[in-house]
Amino acid sequence: MIIKGKVHKFSDDINTDDIIAAKYLVSTDAQELGKRCMETISPDFSQKVTPGDIIVAGNNFGCGSSREHAPLAIKGCGISAVIAKSFAAIFYRNAINIGLPFLESADVDNINDGDIIEIDLSTGVIKNVTQNKNYKTHAFPQFLQQIVECGGLINYIVKSLKK
Amino acid sequence: MGYTIAEKILLKHCACKSIAPGDFIEANVDVALANDITAPLAISEFKKSGFKQVFSKNKIVLVPDHFAPAKDLKSANQCKILANFAKEQEIKNYFEIGSMGIEHALLPEKGIVMPGDLIIGADSHTCTYGALGAYATGMGSTDLARAYIDGKCWLKVPATHKYIFKGKLNKWVGGKDLILYTIGQIGVDGALYKVMEFSGPVIKQLGMDDRFSMSNMAIEAGARAGLIEPDATTKKFVASFKRKPKFYYSDADAVYEKIYEWDVTSLEPMVACPHLPSNVKPVSALKSIKVDQVVIGSCTNGRISDLRIAAALLKNKKIAKGIKLIVFPATQKIYLQSVKEGLAEIFVKAGGIFSTPTCGPCLGGHMGILADGEVAIATTNRNFLGRMGSPKSFVYLSNPAVAAASAITGKITHPGKV
Image (cartoon, rainbow over all chains, first blue to last red; front, side, top):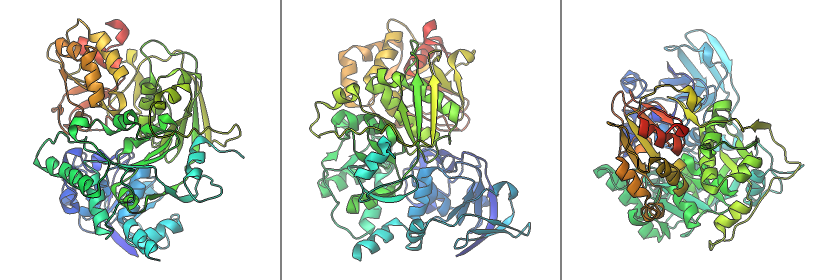
């Protein structure tokens, strides 16, 4: 699976309150949540996103709350994938469980806001089209790849229980 | 090679013969918790899966606490999804507002979570129960939906970091200060995807309320869980409950990825400054920081001993002019106990309000939202930008004594000075 889009760059420790503030947690609708994505730190973020764009961030992306509304809001505003140096543990599993593609990469500092990048999830290669450079990342653990391939945790469980 | 307490609990809950950090396991859960924010998503995912019956009527816990009592129509409808599902599935542990409390204070109080349990919760502060010697960890709604189906969850076994606290604690210093100090030392990702194990003579001296405060904030260092080995204090706490506890202890040759050892004898009350829980300073280093609002309560510090500490300072005193003091006990039981002991009266006579249990103000939900430019000192667990309301507000985190002292003077104050 190849994902291509424009980069929106964020810093370290982007927390779940930044991604979607608690006052919007009265909805579970991804589109509705998406309109408020990153509002606290980037008020017009959802309007700046073109469907397919990619978030690139520093360490500990998604720290804080367990709210699955955070990856849902990211998906809902049109972001197709997140690349970060590291992810907070609950966000990590939430992203897998709802099928939001993401990659850990140490090369985040070399990617600029506005760059066009291309991600090959099966090989873990990130191609920076703007800078004409390639970055290699770790492939997803096999167990987690199976969940993503099934389209999320529930589908995976339903499928494995039927076996 | 031996196991840590966390590894022993995980091993007991899966089909593997041995485990090691990095392994993926399918584990059986003893308790699956969700609240009015996270349960609606879990319930809709469960229903979409096509399964009709939850795996257990006794192991699922539903607590409407975040925006309850319902703050508006949308919240009311969210809470109703829980009530309907509990009725339809005959879920035993559903708590309507009259019997409720903030989930992480309520579950230990009711004996629903026990030492040796594997507890998952769609709330990041589920790690609180680690104080009992349980493996308790926060997850998302879809994880809960999966547990509703077959009572299991997938886990990647974390490595453990051990924190040994030595020395003797000063007056006004407790579990909250120890955990703030720890997060200040290691950072908000200092224990990312690790288990924190708190130990040493100082921990042995702490009461359960202080231990819950510490384990509660393990997530603020990025940890999956924050455990304390059971001892006489733990055993006394769980003695009267129906469910049988299982006590696990780390082996002498258990493998730790890192070991920290601190003498905390000279530690003074600590305050986390805006906008990260790791931005920690000793209270005496903060000069002339005026506050508009003081919040005492939450799953971190809304227990009876927290309220007793605050009330002892506020007794026969008035809070500073123009300050808002909000005290919210964590459960109905604590609320009633506070009334009986005269604590509620002290808070109201001092000029504060005494609220029904709710997570409300801590996450900027309701019952005390901060306006533009306002400064709060709170006994809660997060001070992220905009956490308690306006993105232009400022939140400082402290123990209940510092919060109460600050309410009296109107600025962040060492409790020894009032």
